[in-house]
Length: 194
Ligand code: AMP
Image 1: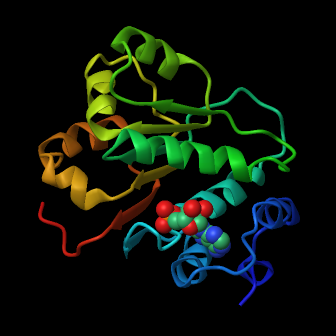
Image 2 (image 1 turned 60 degrees about the horizontal axis):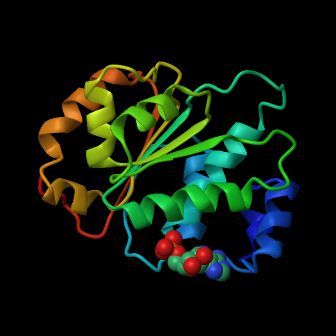
């Protein structure tokens, strides 16, 4: 199977080649077409399976359909359990949007930075917000972030977030985001302990 068979545009395929992604991993082969068809997904995936690109690429494909230059609205929220993973996911978005006609603005929120700066950051125009779950909850509790245009809600390594007691906070997040959205959930264990 080639990436060209998965329904991704030429610009994304160019970025894949540039980054030496020649063949999709089994997770990418299954998940990319499902996300492109607007399905919600729950995927059992380990680190190293290629799970990051399996959601980053089809999300970028969806966003790239809008070629009008308009004010960035937060359309994508990705929550992860760690700083490292947050940085890796944000980097993967920037790596792959390189050749898209309209650049997507990515913001990452991690622990260890001043909360005031992070609230300011989330208030800036951005298309994609990637955050550690704990830090995102701190920012959300200050009620300063507008997520009413959200289209994609991604939980990456969800099992680890639930180990940290994320389940009780999830309700608050769900109240702050639109009911109509695409949910993408990745977890190393399944079923999740919720
Ligand atoms: P992940 O499981 O998303 O953390 O990815 C693990 C590593 O595999 C990362 O360094 C990715 O850049 C790399 N990777 C993911 N998918 C592919 C692919 N199809 N071809 C080459 N490298 C890949």
